[in-house]
Length: 570
Image (cartoon, rainbow, N blue to C red):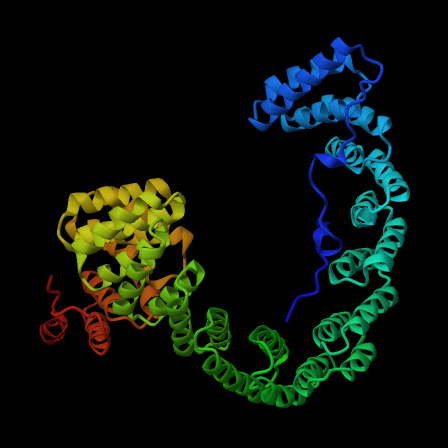
């Protein structure tokens, strides 16, 4: 359905309301040389002929010189003044052109082309009152210029003289009939005045001009519903020829009245109709979604969405909207299905590719994430976010060299420091897995240069340094900063505790490792807690924590030997 237009000032297409303007030199008065001597007459005519030739050849500077020479002989010739004004406007000298255009219009007060040029120049110079006066004078005195009533109305409208604009539009309609484009200009004025009664009368006039057409009635009804004029909307709906359109809009009214269940039931049949455009269906379905309250309502909306998507498998907007609905209803798998269908129909929508990749990342479907990010890069090769998803997919899949290659390619398209830091951080992880430790450290340093509080980098960098027992002063500095920023994150507490453990600060390490082990049931974290207990001579407590860790994921391969031997094995 077409939306109700309430936007800014637009230019009207005058050809829609009247016959095309006549062209040709026959509209211009011939040069008046009756008071010239034969020699002056011949000279003037010769100069003008030469000037016209140069004008045709677009040699504007030469043509201007010649016309001005002719003007010295015949200063009161309207045509020559007009020609000079035209050339000056082409050269952007509107102030200079105004003098000549005004004189041409004064010399021949009935030539609409002279008047129009003068009016246009005034408009370009923001002399709206002067332009308005010229249009008014021309329409009143020059036969066949009623088509410029629309231009005059717009000028009044632009100057805030709304009542004069309405009167002028009505005057134009009396000549050319009721017209949709004019109505929409009037609509801006009525909306500005909040004169809804006046606006309804204008729409009713347009509807009466198109008795077999439902489009305008539907649009008016939608406007009335939006402005909570429900009784007036219901009255207009009775005029509709299409019962399905009526039901669709009635379901919208029911939503405003809080009857969501009834609205859903009524909409379910009309959404299946082939006589209603998909945009109208999307609008009502979105309204239903915003007003749904119960589980039954949401289940019905999902069913309606599935049905709508099946109706329009080749319409991008429907597939993408269906994905949005399913995502909002927390059905990620179904949302992903529709988003993928949407980009298969029209791949030129970056935001939909992003939605696909974000869902695949949350579902840990990294193979699909790689596939779709590479496909998206074919259409959007300069979008750094796509390289992030692709590189991360390869990183998680342990294809470290490919991951680094992708991040290297993508970082040139990243201008945001936060994202650039993420790129370097992922590269640091990949290099570490390849045991290229110096490149890993260099990447981490670059990441922290872009974002000193990148928690992922602070955690991994400090932890890997502790494992290698390298740069422990750097490691403790980063892990301390990490737990200051995130005091209740068990992973970061474990890292800080382990750095302290590596530094043989066991009492301090115990504080952080115990807190981490109490916050998260993780095999690595709890095993570390057991290790520090052992270092502090609390062997039985250590074994107890090792047993606890052995029942969870991520404990080390030595965990069972530690338990059996009651001894720390490193």
